[in-house]
Amino acid sequence: MTSISHMLWFDDQAEDAVNFYTSIFSESKINDIARGPDGKAFTINFSILGCNYIALNGGPMYKFSEAFSIFVNVDGQAEVDKYWGALIAEGGEPGRCGWLKDKYGVSWQIVPKQLGEALGNPDPEKAGKAMQAMMQMSKIVIADLN
Image (cartoon, rainbow, N blue to C red):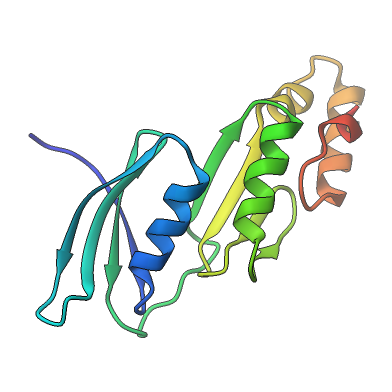
């Protein structure tokens, strides 16, 4: 059967990262771990919220960038706060407009559905105000979009 997975290339922290991610998202699981002769994980197949990933301990030659991000569409401020706080914990960095980097350098977007609703408001003035508000934010604060 044909399938698609997203490959995440880590230096040597793939197993730590996968354990971190699966601890944050309740609908996640580790499907398989392929280990090298030293017992260290080489690849880890896992899923988060129904999306498949493979984490690879590939060495230091490639680094993550904002050119690839994991987009998490949430419902409400409580979910924004939960995932944002968990992903920037222990050394992550907040970005702009709902973006952040976790402690492994992976970029995430934590975006409430209410942002899309505010930006898509049929009243152009209200949509414009929501856009201006979002452009000033790091973590999206739904109440400040109106």
